[in-house]
Amino acid sequence: QVQLVESGGGLVQPGGSLRLSCAASGRTFSTYTMGWFRQAPGKEREFVAAIPWSNSRTYYANSVKGRFTISRDNAKNTVYLQMNSLKTEDTAVYYCAAGRASSPITTSSPTGYDYWGQGAQVTVSS
Image 1 (tube, rainbow, N blue to C red):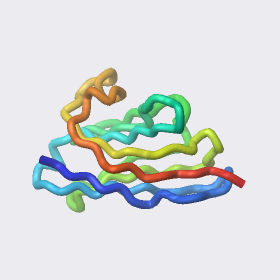
Image 2: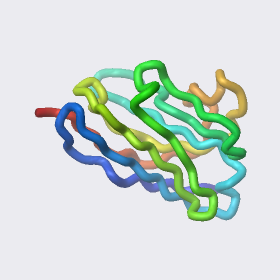
Image 3: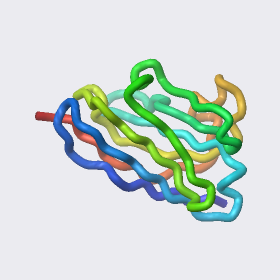
Image 4: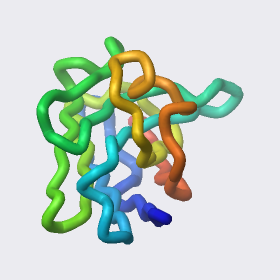
């Protein structure tokens, strides 16, 4: 069992930055692929970024590539999402997820993840 708690959300102006953190419980954190998803009002949950347990590579949605960076610290059981050059369309609830996804297809699908955090609101507005 893995419990996930996100933090770091808030209100930021367009062009600004935020860093989300996701703290995980459980001694097996380092064996999970970690992902970030987001859901805007009236829209489906969409993939943002993912990083496998091995830190061997990272995956990003085209809409955030070059602006967002996912990283993880297995010693601290924490995954981060650094968000730069934020746009109004980045406004959403951001969810951290943990799972056994291992391919480019499964890492970008909610079905590749077994555990989810409660979500953190990110609002980009002037």
